[in-house]
Image 1 (tube, rainbow, N blue to C red):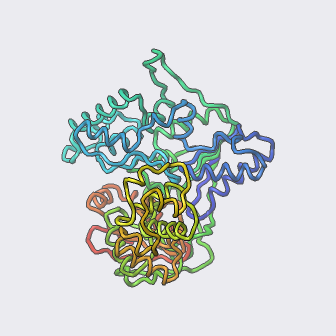
Image 2 (image 1 turned 120 degrees about the vertical axis):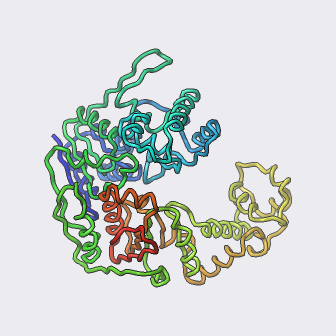
Image 3 (image 1 turned 90 degrees about the vertical axis):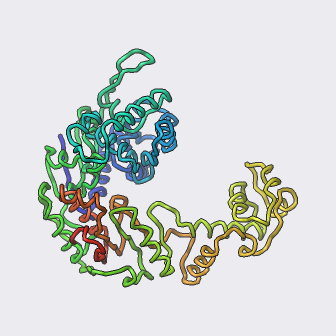
Length: 508
């Protein structure tokens, strides 16, 4: 039996899913008999921690609270050292004499999402996500006038396969393909097939983000389960560029339920988002209501018009290239901000200042902290002496001075002579303004794709599109509608829409 729950933004679909898990545990279903599969590692860990705490059971009793990639990884019995990382793609690029940056994302928010600017690797990943041979996909779907050339695509794809074979490595696509289709093991000369464990119940969250190969994996697991619960929101399916297959979710058979009440999005931002989502031609129609607050919507010409001094903020764009201009304005306004998931440079500098102040006031520090400090010194230490330091001990300032080349214990502005003048000025201004540099900034700048699942009091949306994104918008407007729907529904109070500076933009 399969139950499907559609949860628009802020309706608590994940919370409802976790409560269902609690019900099954209460009725004596063993944790080992529950499969809980999510798009993000963080969501899997939250589910596991909550269930373990609620029923006073150790975390290791919940082995199947995983991403689908992690499930394949553990079931196949892979070693982390055999999984392709960014450095391996870079080496592949060197071997093929092409530049390759990036690889697969493995942070707390995503696992197995391909993150490379190389268009050939992007196409290879997307084709495999849709269960195509990349060359066959090219022949069927890629136009002749594209910048991607068939011969070069074949060279890179063949090179990737050869590199993995020679190094005995796998990528995230290999994990899924092997588990779903089986594979021929050259070492044992045998065809290997995998059978999923038997489950009492399985849960799938963020179903709109699954690719076709992931759907096939889920259905293979589901055959071994007595009951399944699938949750998601087709209107938030914004990873089609990465191979996500939202149509499978839209057409999925099962007993359907829609969560109708948002606890996040106020009325006025909701009205904007509702107009956007009703433009989509292929979607599940849903009744969905805003929370009982007005909120606000404001159209702005520039970030200079917005008062960022209070509250928490998300500034959302469609592409990374816009970050530099936004950062310049935020710096000009002397604001403490960060690019999503990136520690602000000023925070790193401030931590070093604090460590130096600890050291000079008598608190011993480990080698790693000492090294960070010394990296911000030029005249004030002897590099040759410091290189002899043991890396597994703590050191006080007297020992560092007597044995390891430290020459000063002056105040930080004098001692850390490698600090940039701009860093120093910014730290002084931010601390004077009352910002706590030990905490993450109140203001985060991100692409819309990078922030799905997050929310803030205030959200700023830039509707400008790159040339390529605008072409995609013209060819398939539904994907762009979904993207800006996600952007506008991140707000808990106020929505700011920036007026585009160029013709190629989305009309919000």
